[in-house]
Amino acid sequence: MGPLDQTPHPYRGREAALSTKHGKGQMIAPPLLAWVGLRLREPDGVDTDRLGTFTGEVPRVGTPREVALRKARMGMAASGLPLGIANEGSFGPHPLVPFAPADHELLLFVDDELGTEVVQEALSTKTNFAYQTVARADELQGDFLRRAHFPSHGLIVRPNAGPNPGLVFKGITTAPALRQAVDRCVQTSIDRLAHVETDMRAHMNPLRQAVLGELAERLARRLAARCPGCGSPGWGVVAVVRGLRCALCGGETDLVREEIEGCPRCPLRRARPRGDGRRRADPGTCTWCNP
Ligand SMILES: [Zn+2]
Ligand SMILES: [Zn+2]
Image (cartoon, rainbow, N blue to C red; front, side, top):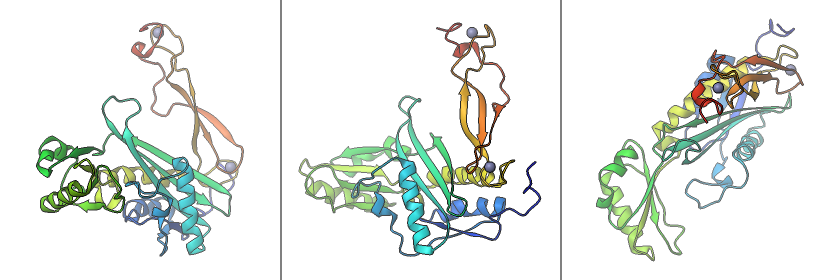
């Protein structure tokens, strides 16, 4: 192991800025404290909605990683701390699972003293993400509300069409509030329809909180892992090599064969067999055996 492994973790007793408006500290702080002794501070006056909102009043510009980096820097600037962390979530159809919605979460950690960035991502189908357009609230009964996990998870309602971008009802968690919001929006929408969607803000969405909590655990473990060369926190998988061999014919498949671990600070890289212990691919995934 490296020269610094005997020393205390560099983040023990330190503070990092967390830029959030939506109570994400509850999910993100405990694993970071447990694994590396790092505490989070949520600076006042950081309005991450300036970088874009789920409800579209402000469009988001850039990749999730770029948005997360800008968010983290807002908190670091507001607090004067050289360490920062931010989350960016996005929702839509799963890229591989047909008809399933997906929650893509990215957590980014910045250390301006070491000059490092560490990113962990998750793609989960454990999400209620859904939307529907209705003329009356009772058209929502049944399947939609069950999939949306209403009322344990919030809803957002706005006019479906027309020049009324300011009219948005967020964080709806009761049937009467939902009815009122739909009626209001139907009245002002030029097509007499209301757009109802799941509220994906973390404090309104326990499913998202669970995904974020698991992701924060992975980020914390990664920060606990230190580079065997230079001792920097954040040693972990930075790339994969495909070509796991088929169990039947021995040909190469598209499945991951090796993971490349690396340091966020120095050039050290090490290849290792994939982490789940699989050494051969199922012939069902082989283009020769199962074309
Ligand atoms: Zn094969
Ligand atoms: Zn290193």
